Image (tube, rainbow, N blue to C red; front, top):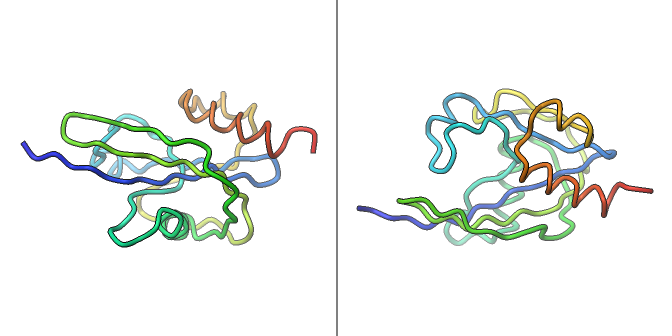
Length: 142
């Protein structure tokens, strides 16, 4: 049995107290190593060999959305382990700088959601938790 390890980077992107959420395409979901059922995603992806995590993050954000962001900090780091793959996932906090969202073929839609709107879209709990953490630090009472 072949087993792989991957470094993955994701971004919680905030713009005017709203957060960017991507809706995965059917093709992207069916080819997923980790989650074939979850349609919601954050911008990001795999880091290439000889690429820093931050460079990979900016590349993935540009490829998937076309926007520019500024990186603020690491939000969390966690392991996702399945039978054939072990992914180390670094989630960063980023603030929108410029550009219009232009999706790649990995995603079919996007939303800039407020905290309240996240419940209407039935986002996964881990995503809402991360958005709340960023909201409390970068948005609340500002």
